[in-house]
Image 1 (cartoon, rainbow, N blue to C red):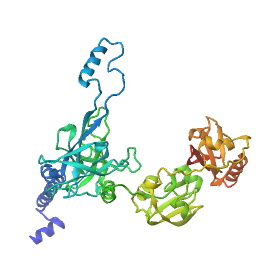
Image 2: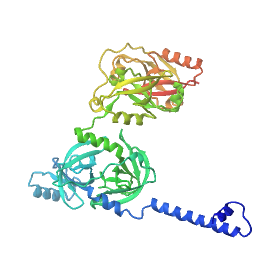
Image 3: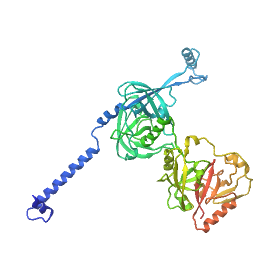
Length: 491
């Protein structure tokens, strides 16, 4: 046998060609069998075992809400209709002359995360509810109370009291979920109760409208009533909370969104510990670094988070400045503003973190003690005070007509006392400035990261850029008090 193997892999002698063909044909057949076996292993024949495993931890949620009675005198039919008197008589008989409140019900889904009765669902499922009832897979029902909610991620944490330990499911790592992985959704679609649907992860990192959005997209059927239910991986771990669908008719068309478990688990932990969220706060306004902004600032790449404003807060105390580009936060690189916002929010309140910024072509490391976003929200960054003297002369530059800010402009535009800059009074609609969104009423406070107060300052910055051979100029523009950097060509 050994000598034959050597013959087949070495020189073929007389009469060995047929044996060689047979040998390689056998190897090919084995390879095909193995490939089919691997494919079969990757595609489950059934989700039945998984459904049996996780079903006891999935719940239907029914909420009851008191809807105030109609107190207006407006008719339910058009005025003058022949049915107007009939409807009024009907209402009078049923209400006995006094409008009565009525009860409304809504349905949703959820899942148990601990044996002592903590349950996760969507905030919009239980928002405004007077009573919340949870139905378990075995049919028993329990009243639930709200532990805490987070409207920003649409997550709510409930608690039920059970005499026996409850079946529960763990969170999985949503970052490990790959596009194409199998997933299974379970919930209460259209009130049908404990319904299972399966599909794949269609996309990752989807955003809808929230600051902290990080959705998995799936083609597993999700309908009304599935909200708050779990999206499982094949190990029975929750990798998402089914939250929304994209649909022209209100039904599933295969585009569903589940909030990623790595976001949900952090929110749930805070709701469980504190009854509320406690997100980190850096205290800056930021924007993405676009290619033209990167060129204007002489940056090597269009990445990081560009600081447009530093109001009173943790970053200001640490020495951060408008125009800094945050490239690293707490030891991790920052790709864009969305990534920075999520990392700051996940960081511990009161923690001192290292923040690396690019400033005038050099890196600077700052240590920022994070505040709490929930405390900071709603606090005003502006204060009333004296305004600079007005200088009404105007000048046209870069397709813009600008003049110095006048005293009466500050209050009208919602700007802080002492703000200096140029008020845009006109924009040439054929100019690049108009195409990039500049409009009358905008205020330019910095050009090439230097403060400007008069049209002459802007003219000087343009001349400097041309002398240095730069193709564009970076402007810091404020609209309604909100700052934004913008690059304009000087050629």
